[in-house]
Amino acid sequence: MPQSVAPTDGKPWTENRILGGRVTLRQPARGYRAGLDAALLAAACGSGRRILEAGCGVGGALLATALRQTEAQLVGLERDAEALELARQNISLNGLEGRVQVLAGDVAQPFRDLDLPPFDAVMANPPYFDDPTTLRPPAPEKTGAWMADGGLKAWTGFLLKSVREGGSLTLIHRADRLADLLALLAPKAGSFQIRPVQPHADAPAKRVIVRAIKTGRAPLTLLSPLVLHPREGAKHTDEAEAILRGAARLDWL
Image (cartoon, rainbow, N blue to C red; front, side, top):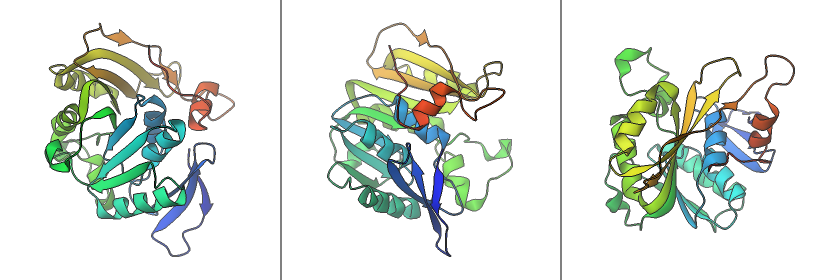
């Protein structure tokens, strides 16, 4: 999890260290901040020479993926101007200008508008809600990260257009949206692998990480869960701690 290394000192952002201190990350002092989901997404992202993250925010998952996959070229897409500026600062802070770039854009726009060839691997942590009547509205500065304007359909549609045939799609989302994710991806993707993420070994999964292959045809596989916390002792299980520190990744079959 992020560890603060600098107070705000009146600035609108804090500076943190993630991935075992290997990545410096400026994040808004208020509003949505990269955390566990971004770390898991980076650990699960498929490999490839060219990788895209839709909705990259300040670049937490994007930069962690760049450090994990040192030969890859990465592009992040972000519609929020403040997050986009911080992402550009973070790329520079970590000396990754040669391999990582971020672009202004929205999953609501056609992928072809970016004038980019399809990617080998794409990833996203879509907003977890798309119906504002189903929960108490978040703080205004968090709305864009919590509420999907075009619904989950806009995110899956964009990702399917942005990845090449045979390329991988990796998403982390709420466990209770798994059926929706599969239904939206299935017309164009297959070879699904699903890893539940449980807060404790004896608790139901709250998150799922879904891997799909565009035009894949292999049967769906349900993998063993990632358990985040023991009931006693350390804050994280050994497996989760290794992933958060960048010492391990989430493997797929």
